[in-house]
Length: 389
Image (cartoon, helix red, strand yellow):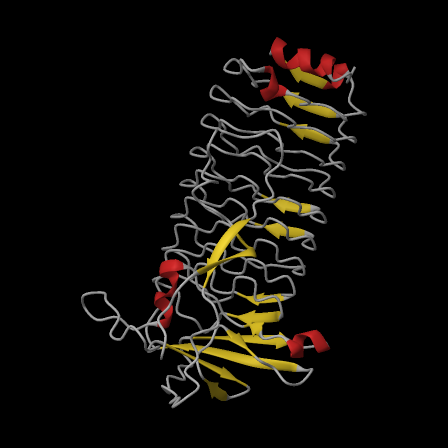
């Protein structure tokens, strides 16, 4: 390879920024879309001159994807087929015992085939016909990090990870982020027992209408913020197998999952979560949700938590104990169908700034005083202030 890996910033590239979304209490009173600039590797990795395939072709450690080239614009412009972010690029390189690259300028651990033809390694590829192509990514050694692996591969419609060895992977941050044409992900044999970060994993997978995560092992995961954010076509999610006892951040987890009607969170242990801000923001089709397993004693931020959940008719939050809460602003804003609300153990003793309870119940047009269970006078004041009764 003739050029070293380098990084550039593009104003159009976005990513989940884990440092800024790690549960900070410094929340503004505007919802966070979760989009930040991302460093990506440009298309300077191909060694077209003198290219020699490395002949990995590993059927036991590979990914199969399908890309749909369906218009003239797709042919005119190169399409992203894989991505890398900072140290996650290690999955392209083989390392020696000192954990250093064997050759700075040589791709040695990965190989890409398109329709059974090995191509020079590149993050982008020029397709010449309008049709579907099969892409195979083979790896000699097991991956350690897969963060942002398919970041903004916008033309991929299917990804099959059932033949990928994931037992050593510790980071899946933004793995499929921005794959907005993706309709199918096969995760049937994926192993996630060592993964610690799943933030933004399916962020803005706008075309996904189903997702089977029944084999996910999440007992070591600490960050799930933005995990399903922007999955606009998902109608149901069964996360009953999720072990969330180590998770600290669930901010924006289901942000704008607009068609979600069924959400099973019965196994969620949230004893260490500090941030639930915007967690169900604009889940407009969600009619009922069981949060009886939630432990909220460490949560400091619930701002915008149910903002725009306009189909919710009842919420039983009697198990919500909130001694550390400091932001409830816009929490139930726009829950226009809400008729029953149980806040039996809810307290706002730590909130001194009125802005942190601003518009907490505004737009809750259907609720009546007799159907609200709450002992905290400060919270009841905001019912009155928002003209709920």
